[in-house]
Image 1 (cartoon, rainbow, N blue to C red):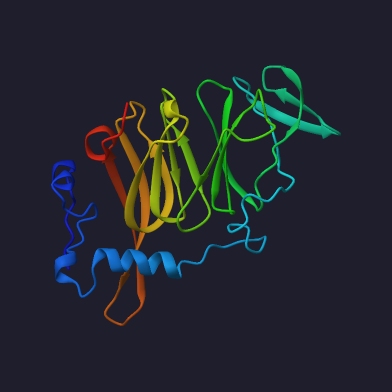
Image 2 (tube, rainbow, N blue to C red):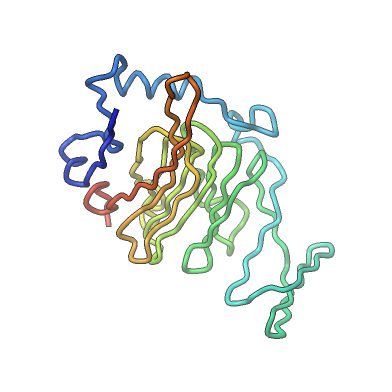
Length: 235
């Protein structure tokens, strides 16, 4: 079955974003989505971490450095010393971020240098203001599994969050992360990235196709989405 690319214009008119001809299949898109959500298994190191995300748990130690190429690090008690390639030596107090319940996957800094986002196997992305670390600014939950990837737009207005499969969420940071656009498709997600002009979101998907002998074949596909026109984000 040949699946062609879907343009932004076609997507706005209702064509499936991945070009899947659902009308020719023996299952509807809604039914397949429901099945994926019910059957997807989120890998957890801490049992049921994704179900008890409000429970208090010692977090990880995180601190940011800007404009420094770090060549060496040393930690003692709550102090961290970093040495740079140009002779810089910086000493910072290490802060504990308390809230996540499981292993962490990724972090991302907002362009303003004060906001930090962290993602975890407990199915949440937590947004922190480093000037006040007692509690996160926002706790954003996924649908299927662990949040694996985070990217801020260059102007800081949007934050893209990817789950391990099927969902990418775009949050409006200017509205306290309460406004979001959900990109709903099918496939395992390797990574996401925003273009330098913030016009496009790129995601690498791992699509599984069944071969003639019933074996799964993996095909890597790079999708590009027009953020403003296709997703209708609020600027």
